[in-house]
Length: 290
Image (tube, rainbow, N blue to C red; front, top):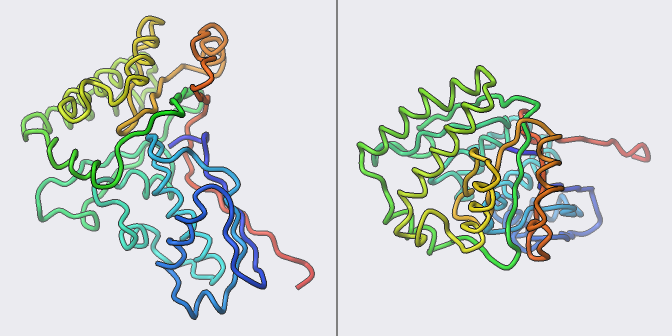
């Protein structure tokens, strides 16, 4: 989980329902799924989506919006015991991965080992949270004219891309022996090499569905630029087009941005961010006029 690009939502009690900002129609559908007509009539809110990551770009924006709206509604009816992961499942999130829903709650690096067989569903399997070093910085970049797979196209692609059991076990073993120990020891270079290798292996598994190691011409081009610059810890997020790269600190990330002029292409959007190790932040202001 990273701090930026971020989802930022504000809400206040109101005389009538109002939902505005990016993805407001999707937010309204989430509200309708969680609150029936009588709940909405009794608790009209003005909800404003202030900031939101791009949709279908690899940022998990749908899950974060779902979790954010659910958290706000729970807050306004003072239901602090509402299980956010249960809500995510109710709204169709977490069917393939618990990363987005659990990351909303805890932050950090989320390890979800996936569904081992048909008896292992999203409610029964568990995930792990690992704290990322504070110094490290992520560069995320995407092309605003391209989108990754979503909906039925994404579901069909996943159904056709299941790795064989041996490959799956190899990936899990690699996580245990290389990725996780290098986080615990805060070994940036070891983690970067492991991250790059893991990303490449995942690209090979999905190559038939996305036409190669990457899902878009932009992602392939960005990966080539990063490789030529000597960056090893990079990969594609979900189906892309977002590509991520890891740097040891803010200074190294800033130097890369300043010296790589291809980033100034008007269709490219990029952001440097620290890891988010605490999950969603919720602040509550009491109206003193009440």
